[in-house]
Image (cartoon, helix red, strand yellow):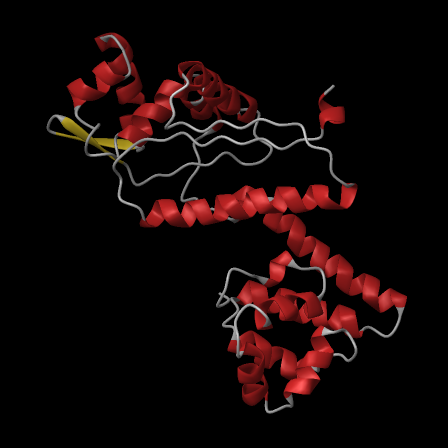
Length: 272
């Protein structure tokens, strides 16, 4: 990973990427010049777009900033595209870059998924928000006791046992004495799943109920924005980057309280 919040994936040219990395902290340009055994003025010309970075120096940049394997490949492709001597070669490298961008747009490529439910089990799991609620709350020590969980979700015994039985049978939760813990299996809907609309609507309805309560501790945002066509994909990428960072935070955070995260970004015209 890079030493600041910038990643090669955030840029369409290697000079813009290098500029963001070198100007993020004082002394970075000089430090890189020493490591690459070149003059600082040379790097200044590179980030100004006046000269091109050599491939030898490019791999040195990757090593200096500890790029991941994927970041390194992307950055080197950016350099080769910038150095391309004709339009055909430039288009070739751009197609390679575009393929990487498209793969990263798929959220499941950003989230490490251990397993997926079978199609028939997905239908039941996503039929109600309660299945997800019991599943996730089972990981929280303050909410994972049988009586407390049933009372919190306002379920009668029969409803509660049906949900628990399903989740246990699918390896999503485990029961120990009078409490539950989350199972080893983790699920995430693939992008083409027909269960996605149901999953989103389940939690959007919960969000609407939260809006009606008007609690200061809650956050709700909806807005219609007018931006340029070229900035539309940038907004989407920012949201995907947030999801990626959120996943890291979740993995490192203590399991204490349940929160709901929901976000939308779409072309209004296509929804009319």
